[in-house]
Image 1 (cartoon, one colour):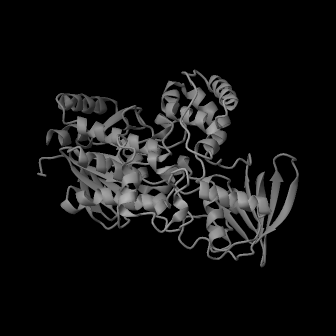
Image 2 (image 1 turned 180 degrees about the horizontal axis):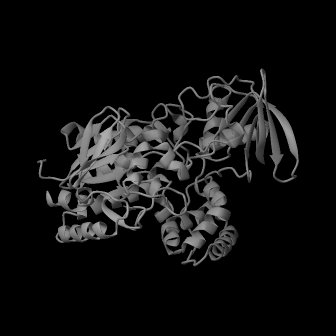
Image 3 (image 1 turned 90 degrees about the vertical axis):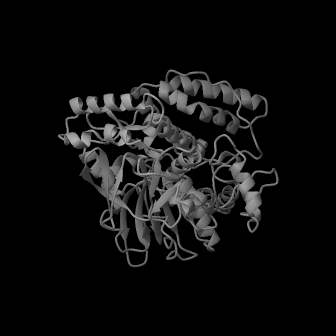
Length: 496
């Protein structure tokens, strides 16, 4: 690697950022690769750095390979490394493997380690905090005070924290009984085994919390509430292949009608509903791309909760825990919302509005855990670096409030409505454009596409395209950035 090669700086070294770096390195892209990630290893991130043995992946490992062209890559690594040798519950009798989530972090780290050791990938353990002006490049300031220059910037930051609940305003700070970050290492340690627990949210994180409490010996009653009372569904009892014919649907209603017909047809043939939903998942990106914004909003407003609970399923060992506790009466899923919370010296009184009956009941709990999911529409409040990029006119929120606005090549779109050429977005923050970017298989393919886009800039015609992009930005950018900064798409690429 020489100084003549442009530098790609990836902000965020969780799964998304690590996958982009991996595909750049293995494809031999003529770029220097730097990943800014504070954790000691690349690839784990928030999801796969958990050390709780109750936290498992939610899909079989044959769908989680880092290499989309080799679906058995992860399974071979597991078998060769003995990664689940001490975890008999990971292997089901039908051959499917659902390992603990930390295994995926170790797997990704192992794939990147040779590139890190050789210097092909530079891992900077730090946080990106702001920008400084550099002619023709992006200048990044880090929390440590270090400065790094980039020709190409890839944003692969983690999920923002859950949206603060209005009813918890002013109550959660300093009270160990109210857990607003269930991913913290000691989040559940203060909950006594017999405690009555309220979980706000009924998705996958709720399932993780219940499994963690159960592993710790918790036997008290758990109530999980959400607006619709929908909880994530389980996998089929055995391996299934996608079935059905989901044609291009021009509207949400048309898609819903098709899915209902295919579900009925599958039931007639003794096939589980999961086979039909897997067909929809395979075509989700194409369906999303074909819909106008109005249909996308309609889907998010009316069908998203049902899609999420059927699409993002619970690992069988975790599903067994939930089923056991529901049968024993120590887990209740309720369609309800919180009207008021009053922490007292011994219990936390919660007024719950039952969404079905319309009645409000006051219930006593010893602990409240918030599992409402990331607040993607608050990303700029959560991340000062993204806020700095927005101030400089380099990024903007997507129209649906799901993350960052990007074009069909994952290039960030600024407030002026123009896509730059040297800032890309990888992972869930790009899902406003691509739709299905929360599951690991989709994130992997997207990371490979982002790497291919960067790699393709070394092909003939790249420089002319960059020159045109820089000229257009000079004429159309309304944020008042300097001419030197606006030429980042040209000068940096000329160096290669």
